[in-house]
Length: 271
Length: 237
Figure 1 (cartoon, rainbow over the protein chains, first blue to last red):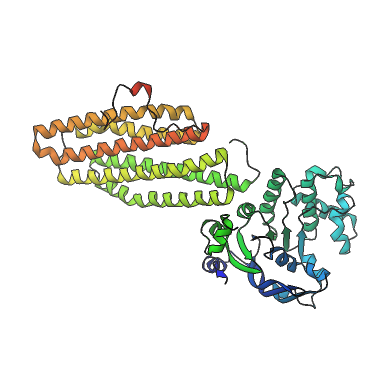
Figure 2: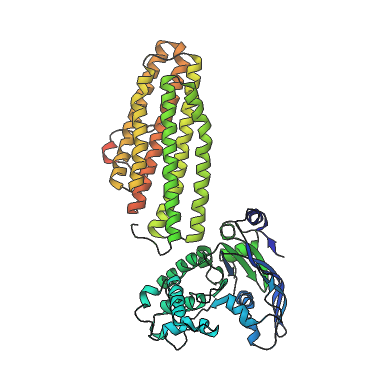
């Protein structure tokens, strides 16, 4: 069922050491109670690249994303089968013996609607570090500034760090949430429709930020906006009713998809 | 067009295709110059070089088309960005054609020199046409590089001059052929070269028209100029 599209070009890139696998789902199935939301997904996640998940509503893209930081653990009746291996240490993050809190230290998430905590900007960004036990003020100051710089927000908020995060605009709040996610130096950053709630200019800034962030962190982004996937990602995965139908270089998927159903979705011929 | 996009990546991609087009333009200018120099100096080596370099021109056409396709797929360019990408796709074709014409000139020049029969004044007869063609190409590329619609407009008018020069060469060659049938092969070859130069002028004019389209959004193609109303274009009565 899966068009294994990318193997030739990316295999040679892997061989040439220009592409490194950061994570990989192997035979991943997922059930919400009796309902099977993911069907045997085998998908790579390449290091320091942006991979986009696209597909119609209900295709399983957010479900897939949330496996990566064990979000599904929070609700009873959810069941993972198969593996998600994180490299280079080969850890299966879905294994019951692996602590989900540890997973979330390595794999952070940014959500659709900016969700600042009812705290100051500083305390929002420092939160993950404090949870980890970092107490020293100078260390926190440095990490908070670095995270806010990486999120292209530092210049706008450096004089108002004690202000409530909720006083920021929508686009700024989202960038603060990105800073918060970056503060713990994650290896992978998950974005779940990060700009759906933002205006076009704020969206453009976040997309530009994502292009810059991939130099330091691997990114997996779910978006229902195909054009965003085209603009922002290096690799694209097209999902449909819980299955991975096509995976490949974004350049190839948007110019010459191999699967007719991918083409139908991308050209808007799908009813 | 002077302000940067929010996406620096998009800026880089647009800049890349703009500069690749100029690179292709430079290569094609060199091809034309070498073909004409090879003809004038009976330089077989230079003519051979032009034929070899044709491949590079063709590769550039393919490369630019691929890049432009990707930009359209990934960036959904709008307004002036869209006109720019569109113009580059079209200009790429015109430049490739100029490359073809240069190769044709080189091949015909090789034939003339192999035959060993240069007509008296045949090269000087083409000097004006050569110079107009080379200037039009150079000016079209400069107008494109600077996105200067005024420079582009003056080029569009010069195409008329090229057409007149072609007709003059045609008449001159006809005279040779009437006076001495032994000159027919070479005279025909010279006409082919003159025709190629006229085509180069047409393609340069096209490029100038795209520059106007990019900057002003106006499509000035296929319009009759008021001053040429009295002179029929080639092929018209």
